Amino acid sequence: MSRFSSCILPPAMLGILGGGQLGAMFTVAAKTMGYQVTVLDPDPDAPAAQFADVHLCSNFNNAEALQNMAKCAAVTTEFENVSAESMRWLAQYTVVSPSGDCVAIAQDRQQEKEWIARAGLTTVPYTVISTESDINDSLNALLPGILKTATLGYDGKGQIAVDSLAELQAAFTRLRQVRCVLEKKVDLHAEISVVVARLNNQHTVCFPPAENQHQNGILAYSVVPARLPQPVLKQAENMANQLAQAMDYQGVMAVEMFVAGNEMQLLVNEIAPRPHNSGHYTLDACISDQFQQQVRLMCGLPPAATDLLMPCCMANILGDVWPENGEPNWNAVLNHKTACLHLYGKKQVRPGRKMGHFTVLADNPDQAWQTARNLHLHLQNSAQNSSTASD
Ligand code: ADP
Ligand code: MG
Image 1: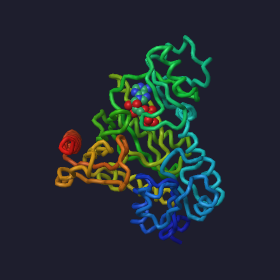
Image 2 (image 1 turned 45 degrees about the horizontal axis):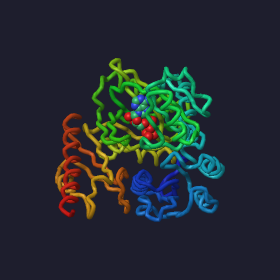
Image 3 (image 1 turned 120 degrees about the horizontal axis):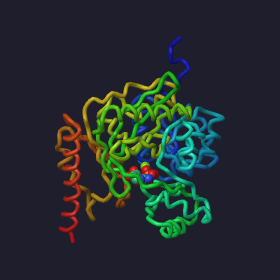
Image 4 (image 1 turned 30 degrees about the horizontal axis):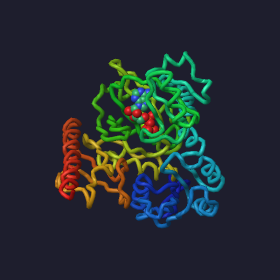
């Protein structure tokens, strides 16, 4: 009997909850490997729909749509705010990866931090604020800090920096007094993330840590290899493995970490129960990519090799580089011989919206980063120039 007889093999139908760019890149990976794909997403223009065999265009908790998803050989998700309940329900009928329980942990900053501690790892100092009465003088120790809603925040949304107790009061009111965590603001030497692909104890791999730079709370660049000492990067991989192990995680998970202070202490920031923006570099620069791993793991196949083939830098392309009328000037990116452009096919352009990314490969990470920045600046400048020209 084949070693893979208990695995889900092509051309089985795989399901994904969510059809944004992560769902689209998953769908391409699955289709390339010979699987069929059903996407559930309420948006008729969902990026994944252009590649999927079936697009169930309805809400994530629609009973009929979920019944259709239950017929898939396995189901995964592309975003954490899908109801963990729906995933638990689906698990009665089909393989669900990651589990609803793991998704529920990642949905809630409080639970997430409790699990990080349970795995023996460290977070930034924090406290939970559920009601106004939780705000008292003892919280001065966490100031200056950042107040974050426990659930539903992303790309820097749902968080407010606070310097004093009065500001904390005001911020809690502005966040409508929903349950929050108050984190101490740490001095960041760098930020990194590790994408882990875990089937079980015997089969866990990590992609090389990415060094992440944010602008306005949104990821702007990921540089790989991260320009940090090797022992720090090794420790980051070990920590990501340890966390996946503690959660008995099955599937692809990204672990964001802060590299704090001159001593470069690693603190776990948050986890994403899915492939991650900072792992897009794997599409062009590694033996396998994070979406192929997502397909493999939901099908019970062992993860593929994760080696980096060349240093690289991924740059996000946000709606900001679209001129008022027309399309960005892609000339520079398309003419660059080692820049790989990925556009998500989103019809609506908005500032801050993730429209695509590109990855530059180079001989070393500095060069990759500098080239990516120049190409990105070129996109920004030509958007401004053509908007001014049409004024
Ligand atoms: P999101 O869910 O929006 O990604 P994060 O908690 O990752 O939320 O915060 C977004 C960014 O804000 C981080 O990548 C980091 O740059 C900054 N940040 C968040 N928390 C802290 C903190 N406690 N200290 C310093 N910087 C922080
Ligand atoms: Mg984050």
